[in-house]
Image 1 (cartoon, rainbow, N blue to C red):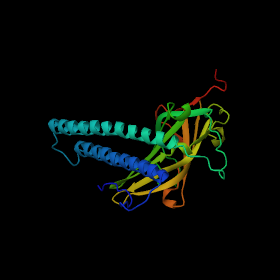
Image 2 (image 1 turned 60 degrees about the vertical axis):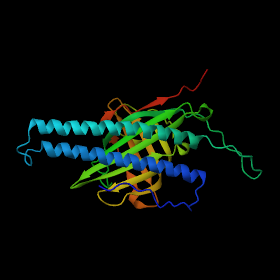
Image 3 (image 1 turned 180 degrees about the horizontal axis):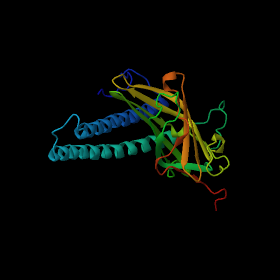
Image 4 (image 1 turned 45 degrees about the horizontal axis):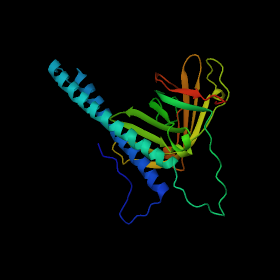
Length: 275
């Protein structure tokens, strides 16, 4: 299992503020990818021990020792996940709160940015249903949250989208971290109960992010992408559809309609009048 690598950076390279923040987001994505590799390896370890066709003489003691080892690894990865979450929140605050510079007489006034009418919170996962996609029958996971204590008390949406598909002998993994400042959210009308039509979205999220893909032993690849996430809920279940576009076709992705099989992913509607 190879380690993720940051692209070529030497002391003589020059990065502006936006590029530096983008690289920080990329580093978080790569660390998340590394954690996914570790968790996947621990799962394969358990499957190997419990496979009676391979290990016919495995004992209860052997299983307990493996289970204890996996438990320690999961605890360590959970602690690192908390650190990465804090790192991500710090980067989000830096992206959202820009340094103040004197106004240029040639630059147009910045368009005021208000609070969205709805937000997406929680997490959820389901199966990719698009047969033409690389991750068909794989697991798609959405994690979304908000930071209400950020710049000017505006709601800042965060989004992490991950994909995992196990194939013969290896796994294909991908992760997308959205750039919070680029996220735009709109809330169309509510859907009819138990409808699968894509026109019944209750929330549409668009934006830009950094995406990384790891296929087996191949070198990890990353790219800046654009995405559109559609989310809706009927009386039966919550559903979403993610479309990712990039000049590099390798990063293009269309999940198809994904039914949320586990998690608490949901939309929250902000009251139109706030007193």
